[in-house]
Image 1: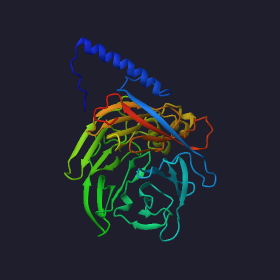
Image 2: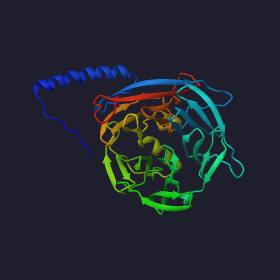
Image 3: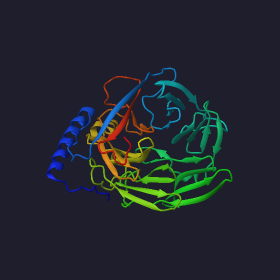
Image 4: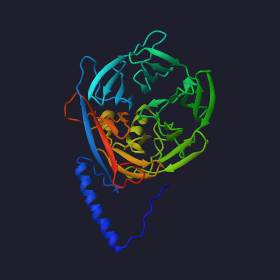
Length: 391
């Protein structure tokens, strides 16, 4: 468990620190109007500056208000969002603040992309990889299938982007002809390294099991991100993060609880369809840890458990859930927290990261603005003590 070091100070230093703290609190409050006070002990302070972009709704393309399956391409500041209603990829430009185009996907024929997209990752405007539960398809900017990788253990893959279960990525190393992705095999959580040029599995690495092996509904596989030779994974219901170094094979464990969340959750007792659904909604969910290159830090998003009466229905309960962000430096030491404004954002994976910002789609059943536009809030998270995290 990471603990903070508190140095011994003189009375004068204590007075100076108190003045700085009070001033900082005032700045924090002014920069975060609308953020909730949960009544929990205050964590370290993070100021949040928010820029918003509103993309006018395109009735021809039938754009969505939010995209739970998306990919941000930093090279040209472009968002690629999967549109499940039209089976297409909608493309938005952050730089130009405009909707660019839609890329239609074919769902029939030998080069079809099935209507069960689980994950999308853009490597360039002409190299967009999607996983459709059957294969990883590499598309160009028109939707043409450039390559289709029929990966081994396909029926066991746990590539997904779902806050009801897990959020796990794949990655393609084009230089070395490798695809890295997670599977669940004989109860083991495993990373597969596949050589697609020679059609062979070159490596398999077992991930660590959770501390709590009880039943936790659909959350039975870890979230997973791949960054700079590291596999960073965490179980959605645990406060612990595992950092696997692909070079050495060593795994480091860091345990840090978001102060706004409960200490833990009870194991599942009602395994009926309704019981499984309500278990996920009424308990917290941790996202993967996302790396912000421009800030040299990691962020973890968390959904708190809903307290809405079950008679209100699944949708209202899900969309009313509180949302929080924790920030860590590159050594995975916690820097601070922020509680997001309630009843505003999409809880079904409706977020992405830029090089220096955490971004969320505005899409919530409680939002009374009436706007049909696609609106993105881009959060610049600036810790008061920026040691270990670039300002």
